[in-house]
Length: 113
Image 1 (tube, rainbow, N blue to C red):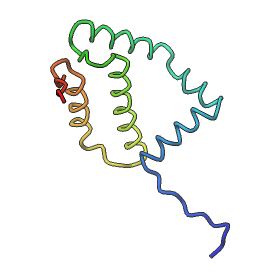
Image 2 (cartoon, rainbow, N blue to C red):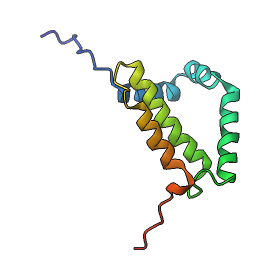
Image 3 (tube, rainbow, N blue to C red):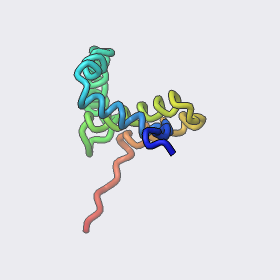
């Protein structure tokens, strides 16, 4: 076996997510392109999430920023799965599950220990 030979790593949603995270941390050009992909979109989403939480449509036991991050992770995960050829047949169910998790009536009372 040739010592210089490297096995091709399997491309998985996790490996893509980790690679994007690594490049955002270490590659200034990539980070600049990523942050400039839609500069107004992030601000619009922030305002919308803040508004939805203020009107009682989103749970208030965590910040609207955390809820947005959670939904972003779900969306990124679905996009990565699709881009890497993995099934997204249940995407509607995943989105419904995530949406239900951030709704105001999804709050779970804290248990007393």
